[in-house]
Amino acid sequence: MSASADFRFPPSFLFGCATAAHQVEGGTSNDWTRWEGLPGHIRDGSVSGVACDHYSRYEQDLELLHELGQNAYRYSVEWSRIEPVEGRFDHDALRHYRDVARKCHELGMTPIVTLHHFTFPQWLADLGGLEATSLPWFFARFASLCTAFFGDQVEYWVTVNEPVILVLLGYLGGYWPPGAQSMMAARRALKGALAMHAAGAAAIHAVAEETGHSAKISIAHHERRLLPATSSVLDHVAAATPDYVLNRWFLRSIQTGRVLPPVGHGERMVGLAGSMDYLGLNWYTNERVVFDPRRRDMLGVRTVLNPDTPVSDYGWAILPFDLTDILVDLWDLFGLEIMITENGVADSDDHLRPDFIVQHLRAVARAMEGGVPVLGYMHWSSMDNFEWAEGYSRKFGLMEVDRSTMERRLRPSARVYESICRTREIPAVQARASASA
Ligand code: NOJ
Image (tube, rainbow, N blue to C red; front, side, top):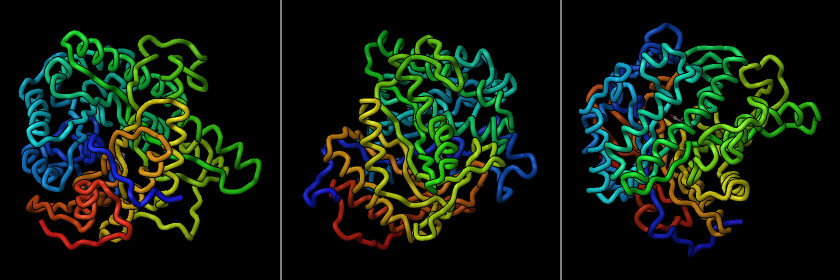
């Protein structure tokens, strides 16, 4: 099934890019900065360092994205800049993030603001990060402050980015800070992330109501279906629990207002019910898996690749058709308007990205024609940036960044995306444009 040839994205549809503070700003100092400094943690031995120097170049960067026809921008605020020491708040940092939102409005772009995108201030990491008992309280205070300071500029909020991924990689797999490899720690961290979201959402809603502003809240939910690769009963049984934990546990808990098994016993959590107004979706790929008891970090499954499926530089299968089903299912299950808060591909020479964008937006169009309310699409990412444990080795950008001069160079895919943003139509045949900044 294909989207009809005359499909047009409505004028209200948001087209943009997504970034995260630690990955693009440069000069951040948080739990990741310390982690990167220790040997063996980052694949290419790099450190985030100056990143893309986006903290000082955000105005030019936003102007460039605006010139590319985009009308939205998702960015994150760096908690460690705003509260470098517990209880001490930096007003220059708050002003900075308000200025970014203001700049967006000046350019006719809708800001989407993430409060927590994987990094903790060091003082909070020292208290246990997602396991810290006081985390919900600290996060609520931080969220209130941000909403009070620039809530008049921001309607769409993301409390926590990909909480389950953070737990799996940081508390079970040991690949990210704090480097824990414990099922008990992972369970505590999942509950902590849920409580953090609930407290943050309640704080944003309360301040927005008090000040008379509209605030719509979501997490950025990472969906990555784990489907059994064979018809073996073992593979089916093995895939079910990790698939549920990764893709449904968090959202279902929010939907029911309860901490569901296998993390809780169905007990109610204060502030959880009604804490999501839309559904932010980060989607990159699905996986076919087989039972493998050695993969504790993957909850007992291992991915197998179909040799016929194209893959990104990350080795992730490119499966645009799956996106339609995911959007339809999420709408059926949760009944919330969906914002695609991330979708993109690691592709250093841009041979996949132009078609990737066209095909994925076609999948979005198909879902919308089927009645799914999709609010927007944020491409990950505007420019190559610090890809966590992979360092600078993965290139997700519509723009390449020269790491010695910080010059941004448009890749051909940037022009392909531009033409969709401008015409609101998906080209029948993929057009490869040549581009230079
Ligand atoms: C999702 C994460 O939110 C983002 O930080 C990361 O860079 C992309 N996926 C690509 O892996």
